[in-house]
Image 1 (cartoon, rainbow, N blue to C red):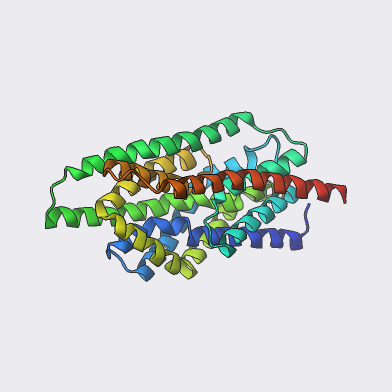
Image 2 (cartoon, helix red, strand yellow):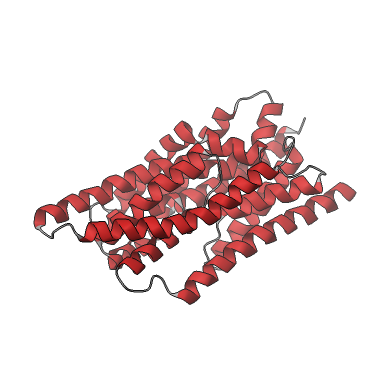
Length: 319
């Protein structure tokens, strides 16, 4: 059984990852509403934190179990989980330092896979197939669904009443997305410790609540800066496009993460949704250079976190 001191260190890293997730990924859900002045930045951050925490506790078990027990055959030990969290924290920290968005879902999957393979565990090919199929399929589906929704919303006549309804729809969708986001993202931070808390005789609910608290703290303390920046981007898209993006992302994240238990990146869904809306408006989607640059960073993160975790755990085993 691991010492309480080492467990405290692992939990601290996990809390930090959850806080970063709350400040970045989960908080993005409220950015369109802030961009349209439907809600202030501080109220949006407060709402994201509260709703994200509730969503984490209510729906976070599926992804948490997926990360903690499905990526590899066998359980993730304390040592494996701690090294995985170190790698996740490293990549998240690199993203903050270089001011580049690092997809936590990809670094989490890669880190757990890396330590598992180094420990001699076999990859759970069924789960890997489901995960990769979900990642690829969701990107394609997001483009198509957002395209259809954007074209459909274009047919709604413009008036003060419809503009108000769309504005309310963006705010309500942001709240729903925050709830779904809490459930889908908390497992990325606490999933590697599922085996550890089981070893201590605890269920995963306290662990999920702990991660949800991290999301709430991150949303309250750090998300206002992120929200202001992202809100300006959504404001340039327009209310109707923002609504199409949210209505695309909500069911896809809910299905992939909270139903199937597959870790999913917010940015992955949102960027492809924006691309679909761009095609619908005849603008050719997002900038191709930026799009493929982002795609490359996802692949590099997945492969890099896997190799880094594998190498570090292999070295520790030799000591």
